[in-house]
Image 1 (cartoon, rainbow, N blue to C red):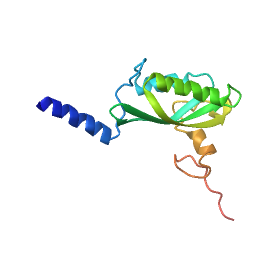
Image 2: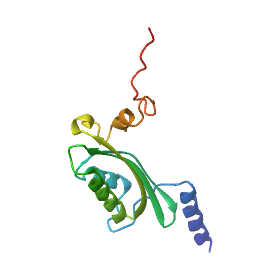
Image 3: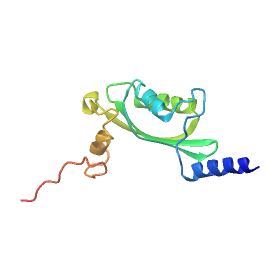
Image 4: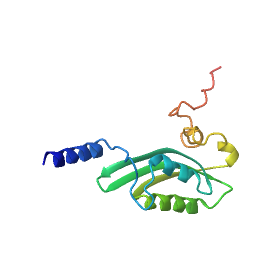
Length: 140
């Protein structure tokens, strides 16, 4: 019986700590890193950042992310449908997806390492959330 309690305690701790699952359950059973690569490969997706996946209950995994879509690419709602299809195939049925539109030249060289540089410019305006805000103009 002791082993059963240990398993319950471990699962409870993972949920309370909102830990990311080691692998996602579903038809594809991807890791979060592999899922991120697959998200980036969806036509029209230029970048994915602020990707967070965590356990809410033993059977429910939640996800939030920012997806930069190509202004000159497929219709953004169609891109989001593809993103949700990938999430659903991996057992994630509750998600929040923030869509950011950009031209591919605006985010070139940022994919995977931009840490939301485009997001900081477009969404945050002058905030310095990522340390990317332009310096304030000097007073004369």
